[in-house]
Length: 316
Image (cartoon, rainbow, N blue to C red; front, top):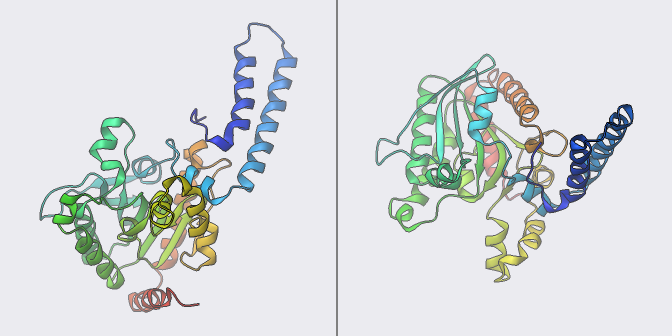
């Protein structure tokens, strides 16, 4: 059970703390203790259902950013029977913020690509908090071409606040690297399956998010900019991030209504951070089901549908 409670989860925290107090009590209450704990657990389930049923968009952003939400590497360990990581872009170096390699999920051999934010402080710094640089996107493009060459589907797990905006990244062609991936994915002759598992931030997300089928986990987000960046631009005040989140309609339900995604993948009660194993099973089932479907379709049909999807954006 996670110890990091979000502001709106404080009522849940109070009940869970009460259970811990009862369990650590030196008093031997026997069956009465068991009954009280059972009642409290029932109350926690009902309260969690009520809270998560009525989340606003800013609260969804907080869940998507939860420090214990499963990241790329966590999910790889749970959904892949095999994963062989491949490194480097063959131009500059390796970017640890963007991970990719050959994987097996169910009966499917594929190329798996995604952002990794890191867990420990050192790992987060090493992976640049999941913000990829040009060499990361060029590595992703290299792996996509490899997938096409060997007729392997590409599956992406998107989770980034955005592409790294530093001067060094811009000098090495950040926007060009992202644009090249968009061009590549639009015509790649192999199935493309996109899954937004946490934050889908700006061009950093889009660079691995052009696909034949696009799914979002229930409490993931997808937006042109972070709420803080949007608030700073529009109102000159990052403190209005919650207002920006509501205005941008960046939650999964809103994105589905806008027809920018095809599916919402359910999450365990209280979000993926409360039960990472169950969340991984839900994601794995969705990936296998969608790959089963995509691999029955001719490449020409996938390319035609992909083109129509891209051309439909911005039109009602």
